[in-house]
Structure formats: structure tokens, C-alpha cells
Image (cartoon, rainbow, N blue to C red):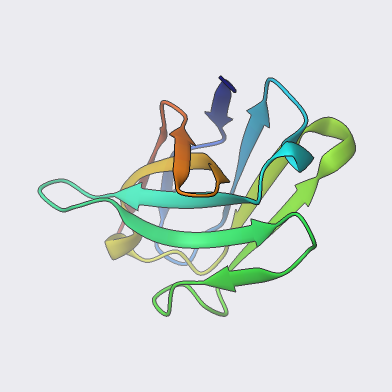
Length: 115
């Protein structure tokens, strides 16, 4: 099973930026897509962004225009560039490898946005 390690989280003021990274233990082209999700305190985990192996990307409406997902297949790494951060973006962010109906998640990285 693939191992995913997220990094890049931290504390930032509203309006700031962060870039999250997710390094996979195997070739990410083995998976249909690589995705980012987040879970805020007291809330369910929600979809943030995805990047399919063919290059197609998609975003949750709440982050569209502010976040950008990208992937470096040669490095087995997926990124999430987060700009214009808002306090409501505060959450633990998880990377996932999707294959059919199966999803493998990393341990997550905390993002805290202060007002």
C-alpha cells in the first residue's frame, strides 16, 4: 500500500499563502488521481482538489481561484498552492491516492489561518 507524507502546513495570517507537498512511496501514475481533502474541527472531511493522471484538475467551489493543485510525476509528489487564505481554511489537510473506489490517505498536515 502506498505511503503518503504531507508537509508544508503551518500558521499564517489571513491573506497569506502556503504550499503543501505530498510525497508518495511509489509511482503516482499507478493511481487514477491524487487529491487533497481537509477536515476542520467538528466537521467532516471534505474534498478540496484533485489532479487526474491525465492532467485534469478539479476544485471545490470554496477554494476555486485561490488554490492550485499540481503534480510532479517524476518526483511522485503532489502540491497544493494555497493563496488568499481565509480563517475558514483552517483544517488538517490530507493527501489521498485514488484508485477506482479505493482511497489511501496520508497522516495530514495542520493549516491554521488567523484573522
